[in-house]
Image 1 (cartoon, rainbow, N blue to C red):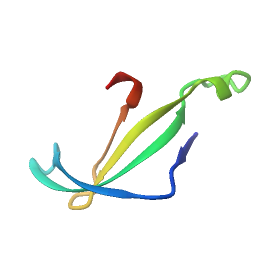
Image 2: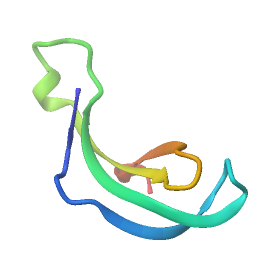
Image 3: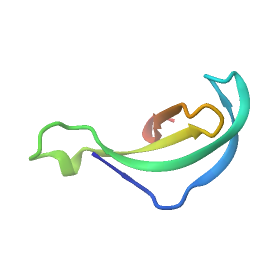
Length: 66
């Protein structure tokens, strides 16, 4: 389960798939890491999600690990 923020931000970043600097849509999503429904509300973590506008590849990185 994830909850995306409503506003998209665009930035130029290196795309690992295109191997070039391309425009990316960047969002922050709260992703539930636990499969246990009882503790799911305590296991949500913020992730930075990027999507390349050229090739469509997506990547995500846990923000607490940056």
